[in-house]
Image 1 (cartoon, rainbow, N blue to C red):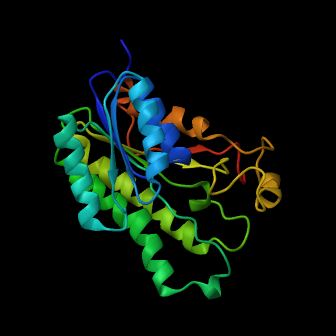
Image 2: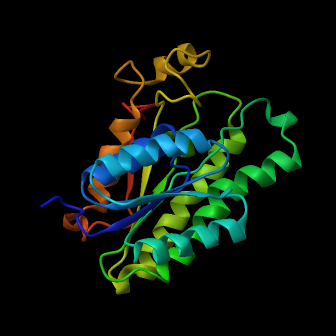
Length: 247
């Protein structure tokens, strides 16, 4: 029997990149999977096909993670359509970059809404549906703890908020047998930050292994936290980053 058979998972921002890899791997481990997406409907449909090809149920829900009502409705819809909710992966993200002095209030509000507020709101909504054995897994960034180059102050700040959120959730939900953990990916080859992109030459020198990771590198550790065998691991922060900016 697959390790997640009978479980239901929701992955926010699951239409591409790391989110798509997580959704696909969860499905291959036996979970029914819902994903949210903002605009990439065609990509969401492609991920949905991969989910269903694993022999499990899947749904794609249009929802902007920056919209509290839409996100809450997506969580509730997942639990209703698939019958339960066991695993929440807060993955949806944006990547603002550029001079600190040029950051606008609109960009600040949008980034904090998608990374910090959305993760809080989704966790709060999901916890209402979860029973013992529930899993909340937040996707952060290695830049939350190590910032070796300029231009990512807002991104680093927004992702660092997930550290406190994860530890707080672990404490608050621990008595119910629900765990909360955080995965910090490093430079990962996605359309947001491709391994052959303009930023790669600047990032690779900071990576001990000398290369970008793949979305699957991250997905396998998310699934590890989702595994029933990980029931005594909570409040932890795991760097999946190739040794990014080692201290």
